[in-house]
Length: 321
Image (cartoon, rainbow, N blue to C red; front, side, top):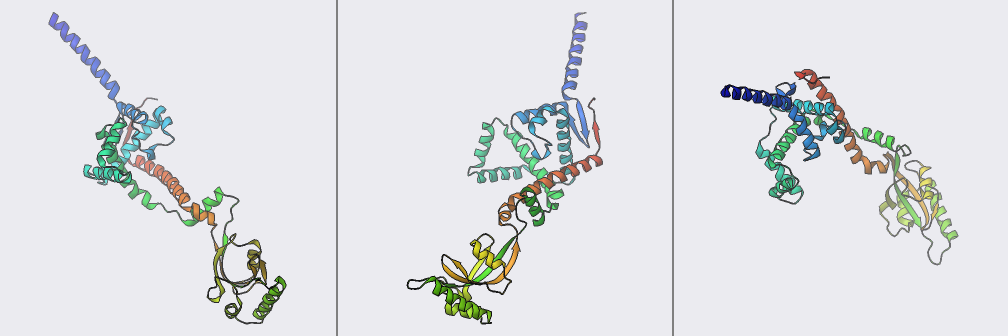
């Protein structure tokens, strides 16, 4: 009788044990040949609150929401399985040697050794083996996304400029760039502004009668930094004094200005070339804007790509409503 009681008690324990195991590790979803277990949800939350070994590209909102929202967690885990299925299908798996190389490269970028990288991993409470697996998955998924999405993203300069104007509604759509030459008449000791102006006006009249600017510049310019033909250089809107820019904007390429007075003396300018360019501030911001547009396009295309893979895949979810 005692033996029978022990057998019954053992059977009850076994049933309780397996019921608990079923509760903890029941299959929540199947994605192609990959399964998602109940324990995967807890593992994901542990990563969010602990190691941070999360694939940010698969986080729809933010990690705080992901930590609390079971639906978001399930979507994250399904997307992980979809990526990993494609990695296998396209034979994009990498070896642990490739992972070790990545760790060495990380060390080089931070001026430390690979061993020091792993020591830092341990110091943050992470398991080295888990971290290596995380890196392996990240490299494989990056290779997949590079092939399937990133390599197909195109952001033109016009795209970036349109985004710049959207963010900076008061910015100019374009600026002008001028290539100019000058003849300079300086007010030297022993001369008067009136006499120098008269001489400048005489040269201007000769130019209007058809004499060559380059020849008169060689003969008459008092520019201490004189270049052949009186070439002054290329300038953008806003880089001149207001008086000079206004005078230059009134003439066409090949024409000369009337006499312009500045602190340096009296000038006659010739407009050698003019072209429209993007706002100079745009040129400074273009790399950052382009990167933002690439990231935005990537996130949009990734959602579309993941949805298409869901539609193509075997997906069974055992969640109760």
